[in-house]
Image (tube, rainbow, N blue to C red):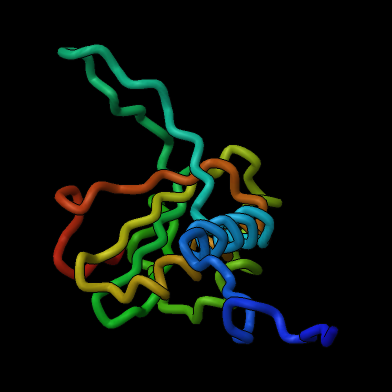
Length: 155
């Protein structure tokens, strides 16, 4: 009696079910997305004042010697002057701003910096100016609304 070593039902390779392949791929994708490190968006940290009730004046009057005007015009030039000496306004490079603000803050602890940026100013310059003010440890920075400044954006 001869025994057949062949299996009945065709000798093809066993098949792998592919119905759940999409689900597995989706789960693997979710796993790697949730475990990978996403870079946090960097933004400007600004402490905003409390909103004033309607009908009340929100302006604070400062002595001119306590106000340093920093302006950025549409060409990206930075102009600096004390409010008490507007005729002594000078254009400086962005890296020089930090040293100037540190010196002015050392001379006057009550100094408030008024930052005016022209509508057409390069965004990168405005961010660089703000970064230099933060590096100089200037904690009192006033950002002027676009409607409040002239076309040039200077002090």
